[in-house]
Image 1: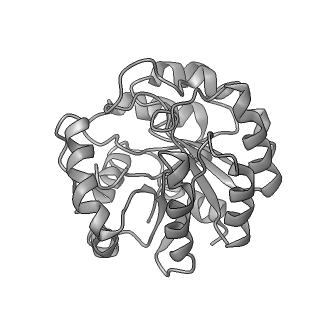
Image 2 (image 1 turned 60 degrees about the vertical axis):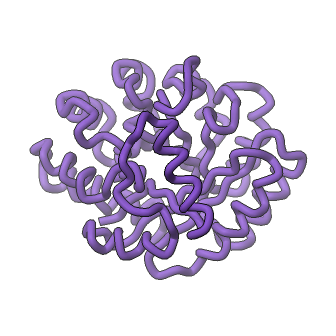
Length: 263
């Protein structure tokens, strides 16, 4: 199985960052330390073959260090790193070029942490450059429990920008919009966007998951956990509990990710 949505930090950073993020999110309990040295043992424990590591530049000054860390993981036998660019960075486009040249396959954008609405016009040149480079883009989508309203990436706003990416894949995390699943059904199902399943176990009604998978098609659903905030094993168990056809379940748990990542 392949987890398309995990987070990790350098060990020294994790010791400070994880408790603060957990507090901001209402006291959620991490399933592993968040330290990069602990990630691969945790993934093996949870039955994963590989995982996509999603890094986030939360301010422009942090962008290069975040991406240096991502690039340091290129070629790992288990971890597939994605980089990140910050919308306010003056060299965001050049940084995308650097990521591509280093062998990075995608980028993570988090409209809440990075303080932008997904359909702001200032984002269009970034999206178009991502499309030119053929990178995968993962958006945090829907509510983030660590941030107040308004939601910066609801399904209806994400729908407006999908054409900017051309044929470059776009992934909307958290089944397309955490806690906004009615809107996902109305706005995103049937489009070209991929949806990951992160942070769904014990939080998303199974009927919503079945309905979205049926309406959108299993070919565009990716297993994700949001580790360290939910375990890969629990999120896989959630998918396995839905009584999907075996072929569809296999696509979600690994086949789709392998196709998208060319592995």
